[in-house]
Image 1: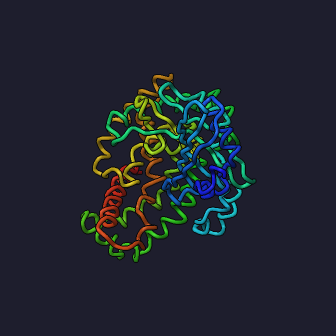
Image 2: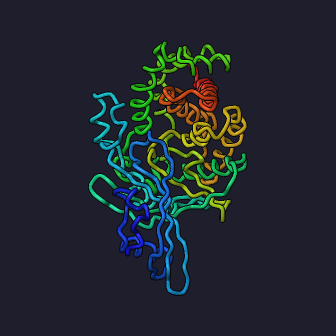
Length: 393
């Protein structure tokens, strides 16, 4: 009987390999011919707000060479065309068709194919891609190596280390750099800020801002309670005021020096391997594009706070270490930019992307409990910090 019977591989849907494909892939990964002894699959939680991600799993394979039995683990990601995204209806009808036609749902594979790994500074690497399984025209299963991460939290030294490497990467991918010539279209010839404008236009301005303008939102028990506990009764008005200024903020960002950024450089996408904690394994390039210098610092700062793994009050200390480290990384690869220009690119792009989208609007219908109240309060405090970063004019 096949070892894949009842293994759970069927839960991978279009990402699943058949027994012969999986045996061949594992043989190549281990460098020796193997027979499969057993396979187990475990789903990995992910944000349903990711349009191109249809599933994540850890797949553990037991392989027999007739001399020894060894385990090997994969991280499997199923990419889908965004026409299959369950939340597609959240995008207003006038913009929905353009979104379906233009969203680069296979960009993560395109980035791998274009040789981004050759550009990464020492201390950064991509995970090994063992298999890109094209099940049909709308689905691709990516079988990456599974990276066992160092346990425990990120420390300030980790944030500084990541920021310096991101600065070096930005310098290597600055406008006009040779490394950009191999980028996939449309990003290679994209106008400044295209990815940011697209996200802000659809997520922030078309979806979040109308909800923030609705007085009923702020009367919701969770929101009213969080505002009262934080003592921030001005937040609803400041958010609406900021929403009116976002278009000018985007115009300002387009005038700054540009670089091809990772796009979502949160700690969740900069893995610290347990066996090489001095290095970072970089994943999930789906938001990458030509963006203002300093852009990647934004998600490095707030990524863990968005995930509920960091208190909003911890952000100032992180900000103090990541900004000078990023500047140091730029200089290390020959880019000298006025620090205030970099700071503007960092903070203004963070505000445009995240300030109006930081509140957990989709969770307000969940059952009320203490954990949800604490989560909403932390997001209210995070939102205030982001609003206060906005430049004034």
